[in-house]
Length: 371
Image (cartoon, rainbow, N blue to C red):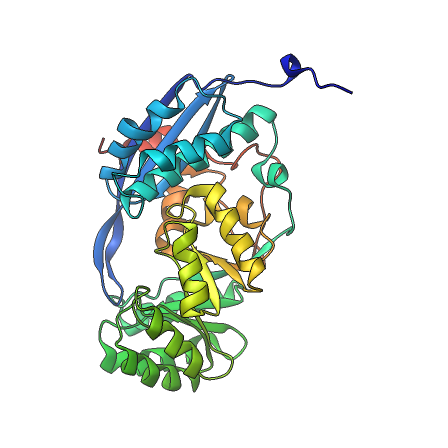
């Protein structure tokens, strides 16, 4: 039976908007290699067929310029259902600008907006459009910043453990001489039943990382994230080969494309690929990274931004868990209706809302607009 092409849905993109929000932290924060007092969110919105789709990235104000000047012109008049064609056209437009970094963040925000728009036009949740493998996903509490006092650290991690989150993660690496004691205090606070993760954000040298892997292993740390820089593929492989049994070495939050992920998987031989949908190229590339993990029989995990990851992770074959990151959880609940909250340690997509399930709290968000 021939298909009547005239009966197929077509929704030309009519309008696009980009906004920048600056949200101060509750107090100055730091990890092993960076300190900050505010977070920048770049929000992209696309309009077609009487609907608006949104996507965002945590990046810098410059990402908004890339969105407005280089990506939106490509989308004007394009069918909102032509996401694959739009994605490759946008990626090509970034060739001389640079895909890694701000270019990748800009592409990610717009691609997420395209998927949200398509699902809203069809009137279905994005999790349903993509096809759910998982009804719900385990979430781990993430924060434990190096700027926290010992009391702040243990109070935050204990709170998450008492809420039923199956794992918690803390930062290490800024003051290595205190790291073993802080990890021991964290373990005492959460008890033996909650998994303990650490994230060095690439702060350690190779030999330091090996030393701390052994020390953290005594506290049953089961996840060592970026023990060395994610650019140090040989170093990641060294730590992974020599880490105690039961300790996974993970990296990938600074992956901006499929090829960067492949290098981590094949050369560094990490135990878990951790990717960020707001950096790696949006929904489209995140799904490709899941396929890469499937081809290598490797677990997959999401980095921060739980509200935008949730419906996509529900469709992923290899996903192990999601990061419930303190800063982004706070921001997403401040700026959006529909931001998820764990129940019994699980995040569940809201199937009563179309698309990503998020609506901007326009009045509340206005106070944080910088552009």
